Structures are given as structure tokens and as C-alpha cells.
Length: 131
Image (spheres, rainbow, N blue to C red):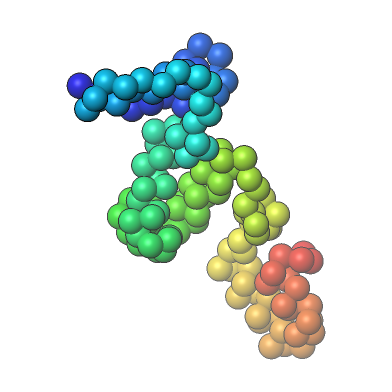
């Protein structure tokens, strides 16, 4: 039975390096210090997500359907993987305000219609730029 290569040390959590490679066909082996690729260092859960994302041709709405989760949840999982690879996702959810409730949206649009706020103010409020 073959086991997946662990990417992190089970004791301290640091990256592991491969020190010996062997050919199962001819028995040739190579020893040294080899670094695992970033994808191999991901947790099994993150690796499964990446595989699903690729299989879904990079379409989060397909990932969402397959996993049975909301689009924001699928996107949050993708952002976790991006961070685990050592990058910062562009347009990160942390940089965005919480989405407005339907009631708040209706109130903003009602205020706009009543002339209480300008269209520029309504756009800024809907974007979460001003309260």
C-alpha cells in the first residue's frame, strides 16, 4: 500500500524535505535534499479542494454545487488555499465590508427614491463605503 507524501512534520508542523527517491521499476535510488512543491505541502483537505477546483475548470459556482455549499463559502475555501500557498488573495473578503441585509438595501433605495440621499451616496452605501 502506498501512502501520500506528508508535506508537514507531524511533530513541529514545519515543511518536510525528501531525502531519498527510488524507482519502483528498476530500483534506482537518488539521495539528497529535495524540496516538496508548494501544492504537496498543502493539507489533504486543501489538496482535495484544489483538485476539485481544477476539475471544475476554475468555476467556483461548479465547486459550490458539488460541495453543496454557498458561493461565499466556496470562495472562502479558495482563499484559505491561496493563503496556505503563501499568497494573499486579491480582493480578499477581509478587505470588504459585510454584505448589507436585504432590509438595509431596501431602505437605501427608498431613501434614494424619496430624495433623502443622492445617487452617489446610495452607491457608496450599497458598496459599504459609508454608513
